[in-house]
Length: 204
Image (cartoon, rainbow, N blue to C red; front, side, top):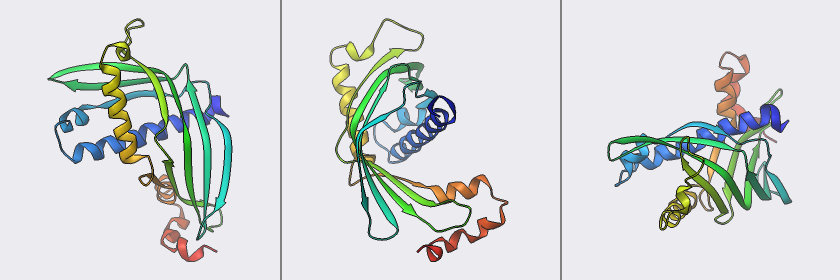
Protein backbone atom coordinates (compact mmCIF):
# COMPACT_ATOMS: atom_id res chain seq x y z
CA UNK A 1 0.00 0.00 0.00
CA UNK A 2 2.84 2.43 0.82
CA UNK A 3 4.41 2.16 -2.65
CA UNK A 4 1.00 2.80 -4.20
CA UNK A 5 -1.71 5.26 -3.20
CA UNK A 6 -0.70 5.75 0.46
CA UNK A 7 2.71 7.33 -0.14
CA UNK A 8 1.31 9.60 -2.86
CA UNK A 9 -1.73 10.61 -0.81
CA UNK A 10 0.28 11.31 2.36
CA UNK A 11 2.85 13.32 0.38
CA UNK A 12 0.05 15.52 -1.01
CA UNK A 13 -1.55 15.91 2.42
CA UNK A 14 1.71 16.89 4.14
CA UNK A 15 2.59 19.31 1.33
CA UNK A 16 -0.82 20.97 1.68
CA UNK A 17 -0.50 21.17 5.47
CA UNK A 18 2.98 22.75 5.36
CA UNK A 19 1.93 25.30 2.73
CA UNK A 20 -1.17 26.17 4.77
CA UNK A 21 0.91 26.89 7.88
CA UNK A 22 3.52 28.85 5.92
CA UNK A 23 0.70 31.03 4.59
CA UNK A 24 -0.53 31.61 8.14
CA UNK A 25 2.97 32.64 9.25
CA UNK A 26 3.29 35.04 6.30
CA UNK A 27 -0.03 36.67 7.17
CA UNK A 28 1.24 37.43 10.67
CA UNK A 29 3.76 39.85 9.18
CA UNK A 30 7.27 40.38 10.47
CA UNK A 31 10.66 40.64 8.84
CA UNK A 32 10.36 37.26 7.09
CA UNK A 33 6.85 37.71 5.68
CA UNK A 34 8.00 38.50 2.11
CA UNK A 35 10.33 35.50 2.16
CA UNK A 36 7.55 33.20 3.41
CA UNK A 37 5.18 34.51 0.73
CA UNK A 38 7.72 33.52 -1.93
CA UNK A 39 8.35 30.05 -0.46
CA UNK A 40 6.80 27.22 -2.48
CA UNK A 41 7.04 23.44 -2.33
CA UNK A 42 7.28 22.51 -6.00
CA UNK A 43 7.71 18.78 -5.36
CA UNK A 44 7.36 16.44 -2.38
CA UNK A 45 7.66 12.66 -2.32
CA UNK A 46 8.15 10.70 0.90
CA UNK A 47 10.06 7.95 -0.91
CA UNK A 48 9.88 4.18 -0.72
CA UNK A 49 10.41 3.76 3.03
CA UNK A 50 7.24 4.06 5.09
CA UNK A 51 7.24 5.62 8.59
CA UNK A 52 7.07 3.05 11.38
CA UNK A 53 6.05 3.04 15.01
CA UNK A 54 8.09 1.60 17.86
CA UNK A 55 5.07 1.66 20.18
CA UNK A 56 1.42 2.70 20.11
CA UNK A 57 -1.08 3.50 22.87
CA UNK A 58 -4.80 4.18 22.58
CA UNK A 59 -7.00 6.04 25.10
CA UNK A 60 -10.73 6.81 25.06
CA UNK A 61 -11.62 10.49 25.04
CA UNK A 62 -14.41 12.38 26.74
CA UNK A 63 -17.01 12.52 23.94
CA UNK A 64 -16.96 10.41 20.78
CA UNK A 65 -13.22 10.76 20.43
CA UNK A 66 -10.13 8.58 20.76
CA UNK A 67 -6.55 9.55 21.52
CA UNK A 68 -3.70 7.61 19.93
CA UNK A 69 -0.02 8.08 20.87
CA UNK A 70 2.63 6.80 18.49
CA UNK A 71 6.38 6.57 18.98
CA UNK A 72 6.93 7.44 15.33
CA UNK A 73 10.12 7.20 13.28
CA UNK A 74 10.60 8.24 9.66
CA UNK A 75 13.84 7.71 7.76
CA UNK A 76 13.39 9.11 4.26
CA UNK A 77 16.65 8.09 2.67
CA UNK A 78 15.25 8.51 -0.85
CA UNK A 79 12.61 11.15 -0.12
CA UNK A 80 12.55 14.19 -2.40
CA UNK A 81 11.47 17.72 -1.60
CA UNK A 82 12.16 20.75 -3.79
CA UNK A 83 11.66 24.26 -2.41
CA UNK A 84 11.53 27.45 -4.45
CA UNK A 85 12.05 30.78 -2.72
CA UNK A 86 13.22 34.33 -3.19
CA UNK A 87 15.68 36.26 -1.02
CA UNK A 88 17.09 39.73 -1.71
CA UNK A 89 15.28 39.65 -5.05
CA UNK A 90 17.02 36.46 -6.16
CA UNK A 91 14.94 33.34 -6.87
CA UNK A 92 16.53 29.94 -6.25
CA UNK A 93 15.68 26.30 -5.56
CA UNK A 94 16.97 23.89 -2.93
CA UNK A 95 16.36 20.18 -2.41
CA UNK A 96 15.76 18.46 0.93
CA UNK A 97 16.79 14.82 1.31
CA UNK A 98 17.92 12.21 3.85
CA UNK A 99 15.27 13.36 6.32
CA UNK A 100 15.10 11.57 9.65
CA UNK A 101 12.32 12.44 12.09
CA UNK A 102 11.44 10.79 15.40
CA UNK A 103 9.09 11.78 18.19
CA UNK A 104 5.95 11.01 20.13
CA UNK A 105 2.97 11.80 17.90
CA UNK A 106 -0.51 12.25 19.35
CA UNK A 107 -3.65 11.88 17.21
CA UNK A 108 -7.08 13.02 18.34
CA UNK A 109 -9.80 11.19 16.40
CA UNK A 110 -13.33 12.57 16.53
CA UNK A 111 -15.84 9.95 15.39
CA UNK A 112 -19.21 10.58 13.77
CA UNK A 113 -22.06 8.17 13.10
CA UNK A 114 -22.98 8.50 9.44
CA UNK A 115 -24.04 5.62 7.15
CA UNK A 116 -21.67 5.41 4.21
CA UNK A 117 -19.04 7.64 5.79
CA UNK A 118 -17.08 9.56 6.59
CA UNK A 119 -16.67 7.92 9.98
CA UNK A 120 -14.11 10.45 11.20
CA UNK A 121 -15.26 14.05 11.54
CA UNK A 122 -11.98 15.66 12.58
CA UNK A 123 -8.41 14.59 13.26
CA UNK A 124 -6.04 16.60 15.43
CA UNK A 125 -2.29 15.99 14.98
CA UNK A 126 0.45 17.15 17.35
CA UNK A 127 3.79 16.12 18.78
CA UNK A 128 3.87 15.70 22.55
CA UNK A 129 7.30 17.38 22.59
CA UNK A 130 9.65 18.79 19.96
CA UNK A 131 10.74 15.88 17.71
CA UNK A 132 14.33 15.06 16.82
CA UNK A 133 15.23 15.57 13.17
CA UNK A 134 18.09 15.79 10.71
CA UNK A 135 18.26 16.36 6.95
CA UNK A 136 20.45 17.39 4.03
CA UNK A 137 19.87 20.66 2.18
CA UNK A 138 21.50 21.21 -1.20
CA UNK A 139 21.20 23.68 -4.07
CA UNK A 140 18.85 22.14 -6.63
CA UNK A 141 20.82 19.89 -8.98
CA UNK A 142 23.89 19.67 -6.74
CA UNK A 143 25.03 16.36 -5.26
CA UNK A 144 28.06 17.61 -3.36
CA UNK A 145 27.41 20.78 -1.34
CA UNK A 146 25.31 20.20 1.78
CA UNK A 147 24.27 23.62 3.08
CA UNK A 148 23.71 22.24 6.59
CA UNK A 149 27.46 21.52 6.82
CA UNK A 150 28.30 25.23 6.61
CA UNK A 151 29.26 26.77 9.98
CA UNK A 152 26.35 28.54 11.65
CA UNK A 153 23.83 27.55 8.99
CA UNK A 154 22.80 24.31 10.69
CA UNK A 155 22.09 26.13 13.97
CA UNK A 156 19.93 28.78 12.30
CA UNK A 157 18.01 26.17 10.30
CA UNK A 158 17.43 23.95 13.34
CA UNK A 159 16.30 26.92 15.45
CA UNK A 160 13.92 28.06 12.72
CA UNK A 161 12.41 24.59 12.24
CA UNK A 162 12.08 24.07 16.00
CA UNK A 163 10.29 27.42 16.26
CA UNK A 164 7.91 26.45 13.44
CA UNK A 165 7.14 23.05 14.98
CA UNK A 166 6.59 24.43 18.47
CA UNK A 167 4.31 27.18 17.17
CA UNK A 168 2.10 24.92 15.08
CA UNK A 169 2.66 21.21 15.77
CA UNK A 170 3.81 20.73 19.38
CA UNK A 171 1.22 20.59 22.15
CA UNK A 172 -0.71 22.60 23.20
CA UNK A 173 -0.65 23.65 19.51
CA UNK A 174 -1.79 21.22 16.82
CA UNK A 175 -2.90 20.80 13.23
CA UNK A 176 -6.64 20.18 12.84
CA UNK A 177 -7.94 18.45 9.73
CA UNK A 178 -11.69 18.75 9.20
CA UNK A 179 -12.16 15.43 7.44
CA UNK A 180 -15.91 15.77 7.10
CA UNK A 181 -15.63 19.13 5.35
CA UNK A 182 -12.90 17.78 3.07
CA UNK A 183 -14.97 14.67 2.32
CA UNK A 184 -17.99 16.61 1.12
CA UNK A 185 -15.86 19.08 -0.84
CA UNK A 186 -14.73 16.09 -2.90
CA UNK A 187 -18.33 15.06 -3.66
CA UNK A 188 -20.41 18.26 -3.45
CA UNK A 189 -23.28 16.79 -5.51
CA UNK A 190 -23.82 13.84 -3.18
CA UNK A 191 -27.33 14.15 -1.64
CA UNK A 192 -25.92 13.19 1.77
CA UNK A 193 -23.74 16.33 1.76
CA UNK A 194 -26.75 18.35 2.93
CA UNK A 195 -26.73 16.33 6.15
CA UNK A 196 -23.26 17.54 7.13
CA UNK A 197 -24.55 20.02 9.72
CA UNK A 198 -26.43 17.19 11.46
CA UNK A 199 -23.28 15.16 12.09
CA UNK A 200 -23.11 15.94 15.80
CA UNK A 201 -26.75 15.10 16.30
CA UNK A 202 -26.23 11.70 14.65
CA UNK A 203 -23.23 10.86 16.84
CA UNK A 204 -23.77 8.31 19.60
